[in-house]
Every structure is written in C-alpha cells, then in structure tokens.
Amino acid sequence: MKWPWKKRTLSFEDAAKFNWELDTNVELRKNLDELAKQYTNLSEKEYRRKLLLLFRENGLVIDSKQLDMLLLLRHKTDQMLLRREADNDEKTM
Image 1 (spheres, rainbow, N blue to C red):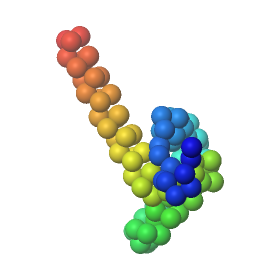
Image 2: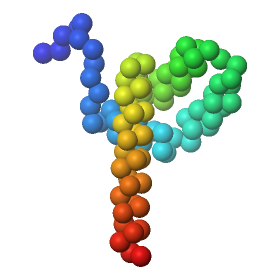
Image 3: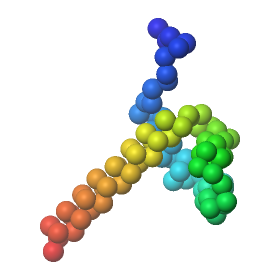
C-alpha cells in the first residue's frame, strides 16, 4: 500500500530515466548548459529551483533530495566505469 505521507523512493527505473535523459536529451543538455552559465548570478536556492524545473519540464518529477541522490549515483557509476576502463587498459599493456 502506498501511504500518502511517505516520501517517494527512487527506483532503478528512476535512475535509468535520469541518466538516459542527461545522456540523450539534446534540448535538456542545451538548457542545462545555459543554466550553468547563470550560476554565478543566482543563489543556490534559485539555481536548484531552476534545475528541478528543467528536469520537470522533461518528464523527471523529482525533489531536491532525490536530485542529490541521482547525481551521487551518477558520479559513483562514472567512477566505477573509469576504474574498470583503467584496469582493462592496464591488462592490455
């Protein structure tokens, strides 16, 4: 049963959709780049609000804590993939 007062947890599908959109959605990437250029002129709260709005406009309805978790997962996944790639490069030498 879904309780209305419980926070929505992230699923594997949520993480996959987030990564897919970041990697393939050209319009989202363009808008994220534009937002990044405004970073120095915005408060952190305003920047995060605009960031969440961009994701929402692209079908990713997440809150600030979920965004933090998704970004952390993406970062850790990148680290693991880079480590695996480095290990493979060492084996071929």
